Image 1 (cartoon, rainbow, N blue to C red):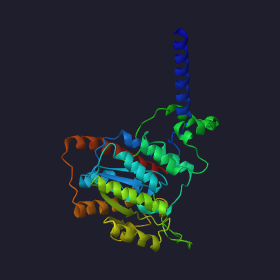
Image 2: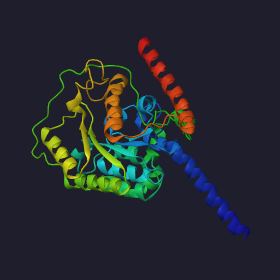
Image 3: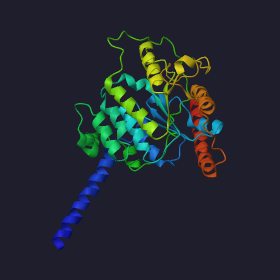
Image 4: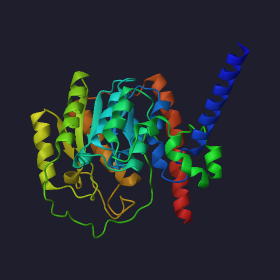
Length: 343
């Protein structure tokens, strides 16, 4: 018994050490590529959202959940991540439905252009923050490139062990950091860089979206209908990457065929009063806070008037949660403006 106990303690000690080492070596996404924290932050939430966004940077940088609450009384969250592929959006939504059932899901359709897995770095930012479930397992298998291995997602130390030479003080400081750094999935920028000389689209050999992309769009549509969720397809107003008319035709046709709502914000720039000299921080790829307010207002009005989603202002528990969130949001906004003025 003593020998058995000794072995058990030794194995347990080794596992604890490996756990700490793995935590140490994994990227912290604190001072660099902070978007890598987006997916994990969702689990710190009270799961009671009326609206869930899924998609890439065209959602988490362009729409402002704080405004949807203050102006419309909608509790929303953005489950976005960098270059989030459509199957990743699907499995993140499937994962979210384990915890809650929103009234509305909003999916940005730019990722329809990708029919196959793309880059490991983006895969990991979209997947590693997920809690373990069948959805995460399926997401890994759907997303892995030919050079990736499932075991390296199960034990990230196998992938990140070479980071020992890159470790910095923040890797130690934030080893178990769960601080929320975004605002219901929103990435705030207040600086501006005018959109000039935006490149047009190159001629493509084939403008048809791939079968794999349509497969997951069908799955998302079916999942929402089975759960009585209003699915809204959108194309954010980003000027680049270029959105081809042939792509637009396919999305309009899909929405009509499947009785879905589709909003192309590229066609609503005037209605939203977008000013590409002031409302983007990176020359038209993404909106800054001021541009985000404008498209969020259009979306909020649309959901209120066309869908009839009711305001939840007056919900005592939710009011308390949002009072705390807005305090952090406004503080972050003030700090960013102060930093901008000091440049």
